[in-house]
Image (tube, rainbow, N blue to C red; front, top):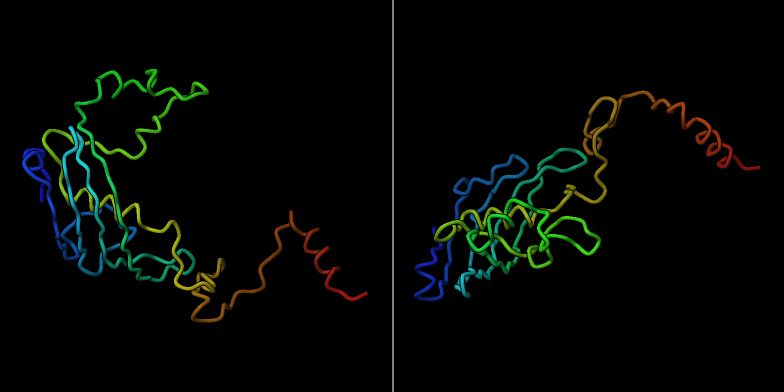
Length: 191
């Protein structure tokens, strides 16, 4: 589905769309969509900017950061987005981040505070699938664990410690930490 400037010039757009798993290319193997992704949004043109407000809901499968087992999570983020036409930025600003409008108080180069919440569109609009994919990526947790007390994998043999006991010998103490291990052992002994 294309959100076009020409249509938005005529009227506000209200959309309710559903994407079955595999419809949207998320361009990653870090997760996969396992349930239909529903999107409800309103888009309108404010000057040359496209303003999109809405929410999406789906279920994704991620990998536990400790034991590498699959984990399913529900997600239902809300979003409030502004897209400006790329043509609104001068060519110099687009390619020269040393321009005065990009300089911070300390003289460092970076985006201005106004740039942080803004996306850009080329030509006459943007594709809904791109907007949705971006919002799913932004809603993903930084680190996922299957459960709070996940024990992870044994660093020696790689066995999943949630399912079975490790048969490795006691881990050797890193020689740099040997004095600390001796100190801890002395602290445990009653005097």
